[in-house]
Length: 168
Image (tube, rainbow, N blue to C red):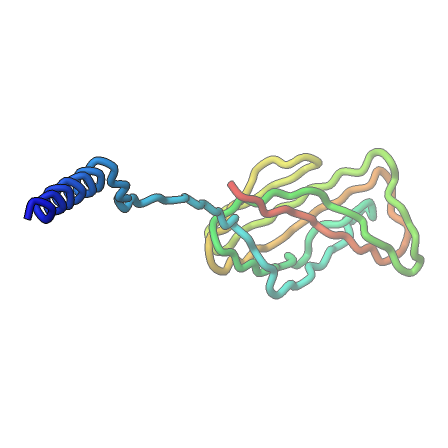
């Protein structure tokens, strides 16, 4: 009987040690939330819809052109943005081809008017004023004038008003 009680006492001692060890050395993990942030930006972007070329009328002196009928372009934008005129460019001539502008003395100006929101960009060799486009459809009217220091040779002249739309 003594032998049984020794085992019983040692079994209790062993169980007590295991229980204490489990409590003292417990490595339970608590759930902790973590987050990894992300950020992205969608820049304002515009796509060109229909474009209607403008027409030019020769100045009475034969030294240049003025807008007869404004050109038009429709821009559809996903947000508000600014636009500014970059340049008025002689793209080509026909009948005869290859006529170049004089290197000095040419004056040019342009206006791009947004009939949707009433804003306007002006240019006279350098940008004078920016216009704005809004999210959605914007109808732009484009006008230009060019004057050479002397009469232009007889030909058909093809000009472009170039402008850029950029985020504000």
